[in-house]
Length: 68
Image (cartoon, rainbow, N blue to C red; front, top):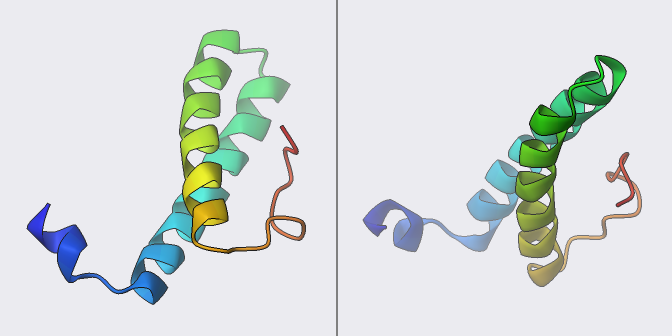
């Protein structure tokens, strides 16, 4: 937790955006490969990251490819 407390909002947003992009990529693949358990696990991460980014004031309209 010490690492996180030393991060500024810009760093937190940058890291969350990178993670959000990776999760979305994996969700798209999981859906294409018909892997519902994998998709469900990724969906939980997606929702958490989306909530974090929203709380930090990030406009999700342009970056959210899943739209859930």
